[in-house]
Length: 234
Image 1: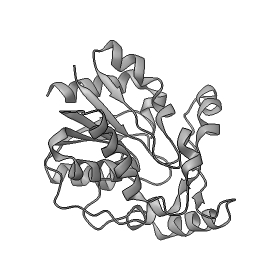
Image 2: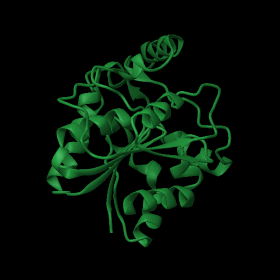
Image 3: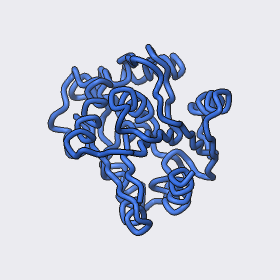
């Protein structure tokens, strides 16, 4: 049995991994899905100073309070920023690090450094125009998401704290855990994550590709389970 911990994506939270829980359990794995401050069931805790560092601390606290060891840490999308920080802060607890169609940042980088300037401007404008003044409205879900999944997920996708995207990651050193990268091949109009697959290949990480759009934990959980099991056993 392996212990997996998810650092979830932007606008998301623990609910998004609902399909994976029974599958992982049936395969003999343990799956933890902490929710970040300001999102999901913790939306009421949101404020303008919720940052990337806040979200890193959210996940590290779960590792420590639950005394989780030999963890396989999954960072999905924005969660790659969080997972990289967690793997630095909790080195003794993280056995492997999986980036799932995720940002794989280096020290000193923020999400806003890793996406096109036009997208940054749109997100800042969206946050400024929001009811709170700091919540970035959710991006649309990929078009191949089923109507049923759209109806389930879309109302639960909440504004992302602006500061989480503008905070620069601070690392004491590169994560020491072995890393793997899973790239979702059904890209949208912009290939945000191809740059990180290229980095993974350059640096000799294990790399995988899945015939899915950006949220395989929602659209093809069985295929994703197979990849997680393979990585856990390698």
